[in-house]
Image (cartoon, rainbow, N blue to C red; front, side, top):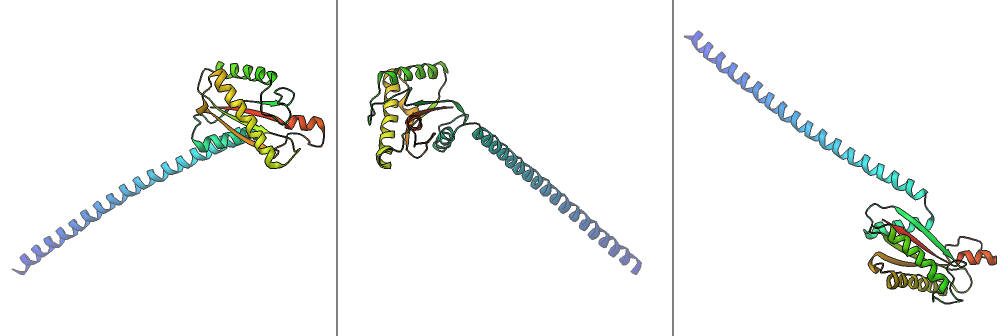
Length: 205
């Protein structure tokens, strides 16, 4: 009789042990599955980080290849969300000897209009949407605030001309004045001041 009970007890104990083993196996499988999914997520995040780092390296390399004016234009356009490719198509600086303004005036001369006509033709020849930033610069003669206002007025005159005469959309052109704050030459010489009195047009896409 005792042998029979002992057999039943052993059988039950064996079943409990087998059940425990089965439970442990299921737990192990779930842990393995979770670890696999976690590893996949980590790899995905690491891949995204690498992509962002590569984009940053490309951006830094691109910025190293353009002027300060173009770098600033790229940064502003990127912040405004108006760039698709985020690159400079070309930039053109009109100094006082190529796009001359009358003294202390923002009115475009005939020479200035002729230069802008050529620029507009070049932009239209791209035959694709672009973003244009027009930057006004002055020399250091006179008060800084006056120079800042004058630079802005000249940039706006260029923007209006490109829109009215060449139908370039106002919504894809912006203006900014640096006044005397970003000289490209020495303001102590007449030639240097002429170079600093300039309008820089940066074409982006």
